[in-house]
Length: 208
Image (cartoon, rainbow, N blue to C red; front, side, top):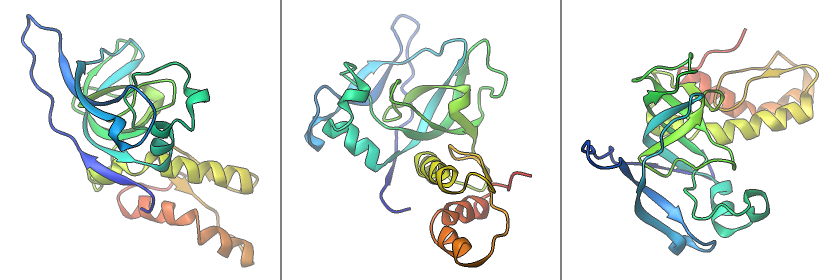
């Protein structure tokens, strides 16, 4: 996919019972160029009742991640520095909160994070149940990590331009586009439908 890069992350370090669990993460303490990205040891997050803890296998670098790092979205993010960036990641569920019913430890997932939370440039990250989806077996972790933001963007464009006659599910899930006629169909399929064909070719199934 154009406009994004994926990176694989190292497995988490085991912590002894006497120390607080730590992890490696990419952290920004100030906005700026690539030099503000610092690899640091930080406390491993603990999932709340409505969250899952994901052991990250791969994360993607999207244009929006670059915009966040440069400070273009500082007004939306607010005073949240230092910050772990990364809006997309794929990995394995390490732990679940008490209210989680959709996932269990050991499940392979991919997730799309919001500006309200820490991101996926870390060995572990927490996500709401609604922010994650099961990873199709035919899709690698690197491929899955490249889907959420791109697919969500395509879904939003689709909803905005063709809300009346199509049904889409965003955040890296599955898509369905009814047969359509003429130039309008061609112009749509030249763009957004490429994401749908990629998802279906790699194990996702049409909804309905």
